Length: 178
Image (cartoon, rainbow, N blue to C red; front, side, top):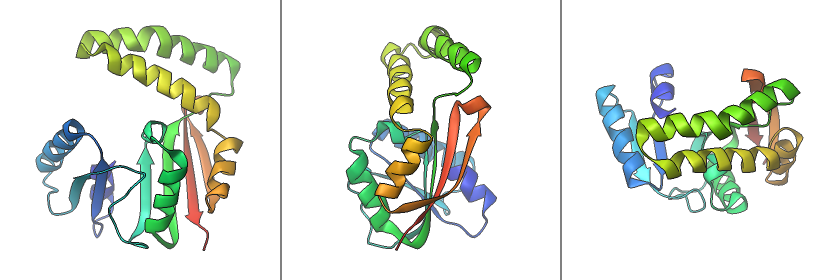
């Protein structure tokens, strides 16, 4: 996401935050391969203790990472804190498809097919089993109206939502309420 944003918005500087050394190493290599070292920086850290001053950022994006937060409430307090007044929070995360046929196919695919393909290709049984479980757990608890209510509780006004791929993924665009 950081690379995409840096390429799309010419005058933008992007900072990525991740707790994993391995993910940061991969990110740095991708940034280097795209010649974006001056526009994109990555740092190690956790969402519940973001190492920046109050009102630092115009936009915070979370792409397929929200379900991995250790503490949703602390993380959202931190995101609110670092966003400028009227700053934008964009979340893209897996959700729960509303169409019964899509839902059944998706759950079959994510429970039986995806882990087998992922395990075969990566030889990492834990990662793909965790992926399926975290998506399922998160998407039942935080999607649609529940996500909007959660955002409102943390002083964000939802200004746009969009379901993608028949509701398998959702985008929530919110503004910091001052």
